[in-house]
Image 1: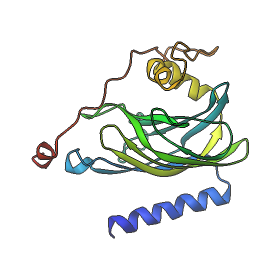
Image 2: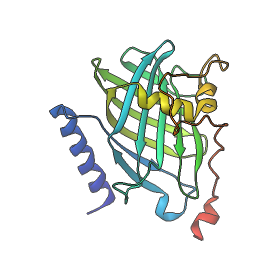
Image 3: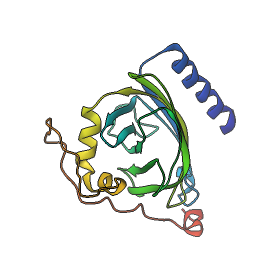
Length: 206
């Protein structure tokens, strides 16, 4: 089976879940032209797919383990800030939608900010459907869909863990996400370092 067939089959699977009204699900394809061959195209799927509303719009969080790990720690996270209302929004540092990708494990661990792209939100209050297509400042591209469930605690924990990075997306960078449910796993961090860039020549040699 070709890669195109595999991707198409998985998109169909996700679409069926969305239509059937199943719980939260997310599936994306991460393309990294600069990465070692085994990491240039990665399919990620998981059930960490959340959104919540606040004074400055909606925040969206998707988390993914490594494709080969069913029970391991989160390896990738996508965080977005968009207006509250369903609709289509452009993505970029000065756009109505802003966000970043964090790789938490591996040799390419670090943050990549979305510099262009688009996301589309639809649905009601408890669940919303997200379609995402974004390009990062390191040249990576992420595309996919998700069925997001409205919830606050998971997003607030992420915001505390990546407080400086989240603050950089806000118009008022002096505001930091707080929360009444702080825990030992939600340690406030300094800004996440950019993901290391691997040149095409170096990648071909790995």
